[in-house]
Image 1 (tube, helix red, strand yellow):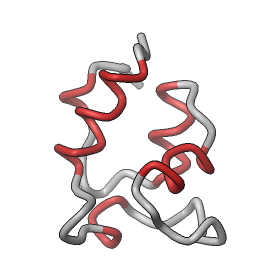
Image 2: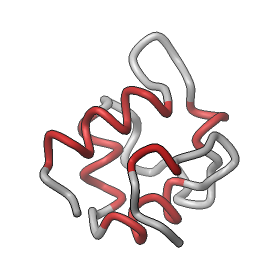
Image 3: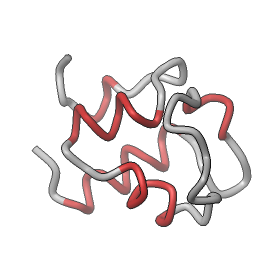
Image 4: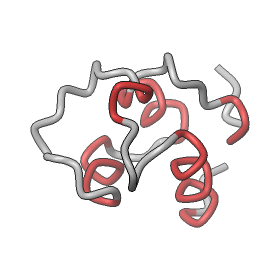
Length: 67
């Protein structure tokens, strides 16, 4: 899977994004104030809220300096 930030899609799970960008699932969840017991198999689109979206995740990953 390509690790370009623009390749993050709503159908991808938190776990897939974490693996693709070498970021712990818990870091993603904590960064967006989501419950840490959120299943990693949850699609990103199912987590969208006022404080979280695939676009916000791309921005956050860029700030982390992920490859």
